[in-house]
Image 1 (spheres, one colour):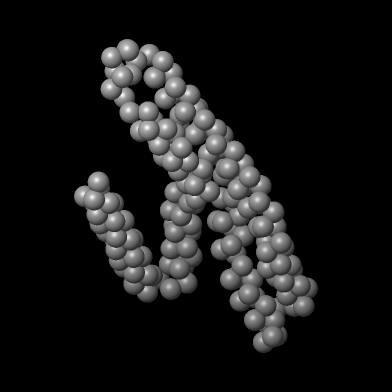
Image 2 (cartoon, rainbow, N blue to C red):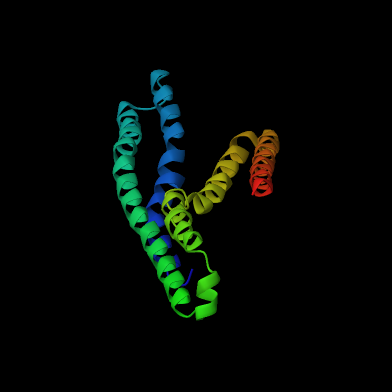
Length: 178
């Protein structure tokens, strides 16, 4: 985290802004456009709300494209660093331990296991964005619905718990087969 944490956070900041503000604000702009048809807001405000819906829809793919490009390089850099660490560790092994070390195990670790960093780097920012986005949505729901929000929180807790249990059972099932 000392080596790559700051770079990861700087790159994810723009995506955090997109996910927290632009995506959450779009339903409110749709509601404002609906109010336009009941003559509650002016045409100028309706035009700005239409722009507020369309502009993020155009901007988000550009931001995501740069994000995925950066994090593809980020995952490859982490995998390369880990490969270098394994290589340096192999060079420090004694002759007797080199004879007992399976070459296929080392190649498997480098080829398959380190490739996971490329796969996970695309969704890693959700570990940061998802809790923040949940807090913002819960606050907005509380301001509009108050105590009904507790039902939403119960559903989220149920979904999170069942997802966690599913992941843990899948993990245990795979470890038992090995």
